Every structure is written in C-alpha cells, then in structure tokens.
Length: 112
Length: 111
Image: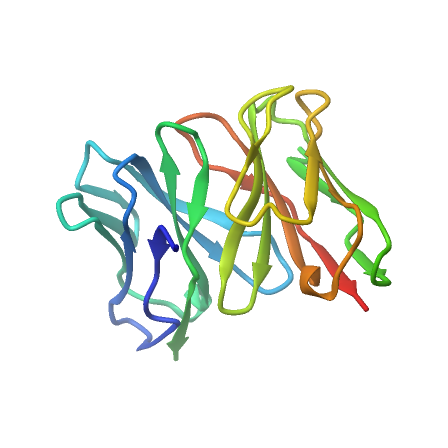
C-alpha cells in the first residue's frame, strides 16, 4: 500500500507561470517532508523540505506547503523556468523508524 | 567531496547469478538507504540502516540482503538474480532530521 502518493504523473506549464505539484500521504508518523528533483541518468537531488510543525517553507522560487489535517503537501515553483523540467519526487520521513518513503514522481515540463 | 559513491555504475547479470552492489559515504551519516527506481513506480525503499550494525526491511525487500559492516559502507546483495530485479538502484545517506544525499545509481539488467 503506497504511503506517499503523487497522483499526477505529468504536468506541463508555460515558462513564467506557476507550477504546482501535489503529494498525499497516509502515515501519521511522518514528521519531515522533502521534495527532490531528478534528471535522467542522475541521482535525485534535494530541493526543499518542511517539518511537520510548520505549514510553509520558502526558498527562492520554491515554496512547500503542508496541510497536516488533509495529509497533503504541495510544491509551488514561481516563476517556472525551462531548466525546471525534470521529475519531481515527494518524500516523507517516518519519525518512529527513520525510513524515508518516496512517491511515484511527477514529470514537469516547462515550455519556453 | 565524493558524497555517496556507488559501484558498479552498470551491470548485466544472467538469471540466477549473484552480485553485490557497493555503496560508501564520506559524510559521517548514521542512516543509509537502498532504493530501486522503476518506471511509474517511483523510488521504492528496499532496505534501511539507521546506524552501523542495524538494518531494517523497507517496502520491497524480497530477493535482497544487505550488510552494514561499518558507518561508511552499506552493501546490497542479490543472491539469485531474477529479471524482475532489472532496475536502477540508488543508495542514499542522511542524518536524522535532514535531507538524504543520493549516489549516481547502478543500472542493473538481468537477462
């Protein structure tokens, strides 16, 4: 049973517009949430994270929002750039075990 | 800084053969992970090690064994490879409360 779900396999946006990537989770023991970016033939690279005690974290063009009651988080990229085109993974860390669980990924395409 | 180093980068095995994927990190992290990435499935946790000498099953442990002999190294062993284990394997390390750092991956094909 998938504990972390990214229900949109792909997303296409125009350069300069906002990209919103979504993620849902089921495990109440998750206390730390992360977004990773992945290019083909490379390992995932860390983008931004948020602790469960916060509801928003911002880093430049990237903002992550956490809604604990809905068990939902989202990544906003504003403005989107063609170099943002990649696969984005949502991940959650179990505060009990330390395990880091990933979603299926969303492929973002930013068109010039 | 090397970060997380995985060897080999590519491997082709015949069904039934065994092999060990090596992973080493130089960041003095306690936690280490092994994942596999398959199309449409994302990154699935195979095994996890919270600290030297401890290991725990992840989401898809069947067909794999791991060894955490010291703080730096975490190896993944396939005792009898099957075509279903064709995948890209990633090793990662982290400290509690911080992000995980990934290696470049091992592309394994089992024929």
